[in-house]
Image (cartoon, rainbow, N blue to C red; front, side, top):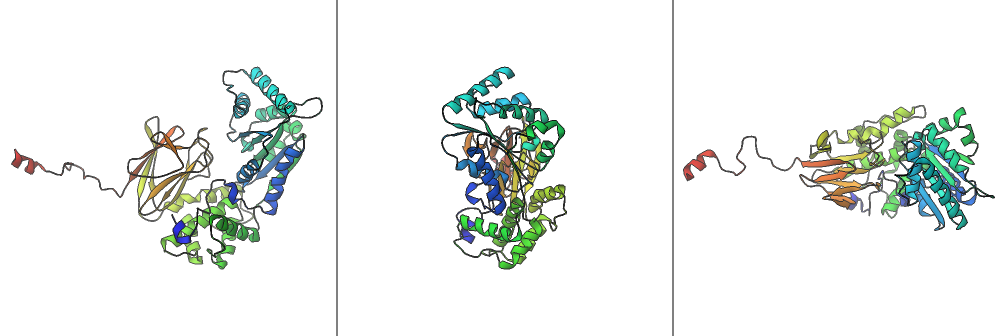
Length: 413
């Protein structure tokens, strides 16, 4: 990648939620303080909403890293669950194996565990990301859990994080009892233009810029114009612009590089009136990041021995995950929201895990990143990705792979 050219220790604009890169804008700092309040108050029940890519998951990961040892946490990220599956998932997080239990036994075990932790002086926290996908029936189970208490106080603290649709659900008449139990609600808005510039410089500094000016001053307003201050969009555009500068062997990103990146991504200006579907389309736009340049390789995505997708690889980045904002979406409970990425250059190709829950495997060994070679098979959840290097010479159809021909063979005979 471009690390050596820009003299950086690590990639500054990864899409994975890395707490060390968190930029605490006023909005993010307030949301984090609300999360922390769940520990201070015995009836802590907080709802944090924000648009796709606003930084909710990174906030959660940062908050979790700072928790004291006396806090026991269950974190649920897969939310397309039945009520029983939801309750079982919580118990799994607490170290139980509840899959043979019927619902009454699950509830009794969970209730007993919560009370025991309280008696032992420990706080129990349940964090649910992507909570907008929870059904009303599951949310009703959550309401019942939030009511578990001793004679003096409640024993379960709850944080719900999700997209704005979560607010719509909570405001419905069907969930009025649950909504009354929520102590604090906060909507995480996008960054201002000044915060966008500070966000970019912060991530570059964490990555090792040491105060060096890597982005030209005149491109910051343009970045804001095309991203609307959405952190994930900022990451995508900045990373693509750095790739454009790298391809031109320049150690600073100019307006020309940024315009090349915008062209590759095929983005239009972001504006406040753009609806959420347009924002999602912009997040998905990295698909176009591989629309130019030579074909370096191909990947075949297979399930149960059958190929379900084939994709050419050109210089750029391709993100694979469960949600629709990925370049390749795999709708499976074994796949994380942003599971892994394939970074392709003209002379190399690597696959990198994006802090997924279930990881990526090469020859049954879990790897953080792996330089891809022709014929490599990567296990991703229940799927297999085969890499084919198009730069490797292949025998022509009908050619003798031994290098001899029929005439030579006849002479030898």
